[in-house]
Length: 83
View 1: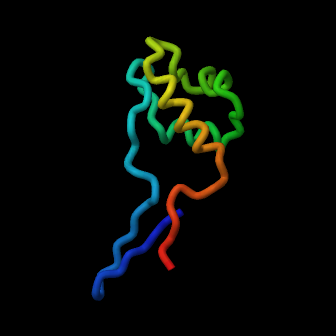
View 2: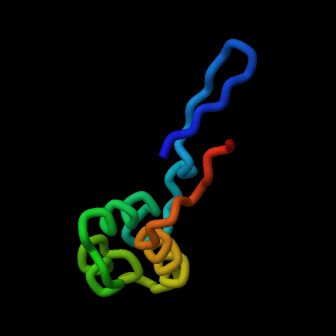
View 3: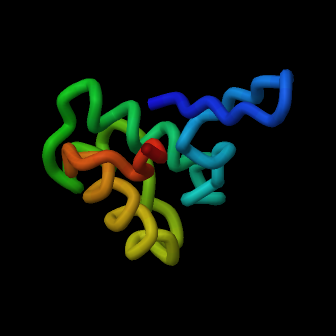
């Protein structure tokens, strides 16, 4: 989803998603990679680990990886466009 904000005569456009954040430093997996995997049909955390390598190194990222993945599977928008 893209949002547009208009200030006077200048329009700014931005993605609702923040810039990419590394979730797994061991395997260099970003939150964007986890969302793309979910969009591509990955439906379980085991499948996600096989597809991306996330949380297969030290494992410290597992909680964050699961949270990002669960949000990616949730069809509700992450941000709401103002009325």
